[in-house]
Image (cartoon, rainbow, N blue to C red):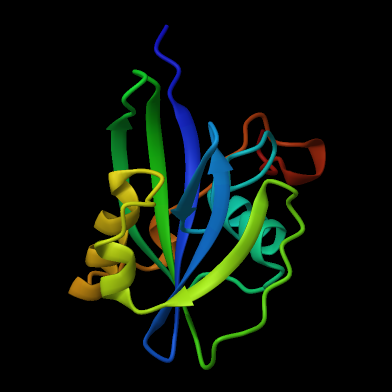
Length: 157
C-alpha cells in the first residue's frame, strides 16, 4: 500500500522578508519553511500552527492555503506537502523550541530562491507561489471524523 509522508509548511512574510529555519540534514546546513509531519489526531491547520510554534517560537495561525505538492524526494520518499501562508505586520524575534532547528532567518526572497542551502526545491517553489498572489481560503480544507461520538450523533441515528 502506498503511504506518502504527509507534511505541512508555512510561508511566513513580514515587511517584505521571509522566514526560513536553518537545520542540519545529513551533516549539511539547509533552509526550509517552518514545516513538519502531520501527527495523529490533528488537522492540517493544527499541524501547521504546531510546527510554526515549535520551529520558530511564533504562535500564529496561517491565513490562507497556497498549494498541495506531491513530491518524490531524491531518496524515493513520497511526500504530500500542504502549503500555507502567513503575513505578519512585522518581523518577530524567533525562539526555536525544536532542537533540530539551529536558528531562524528573515531574508529577502531572492536570497532564498537563489540559495544553494535549500532543503528541497519546494522551498523556492513555495516562495514563488506565495509571490504569485495565489491564495485559497482555509475552509477548503476540512477535517471529518467518523464515527461520531455519541454526543455528536444526529438525532435520527
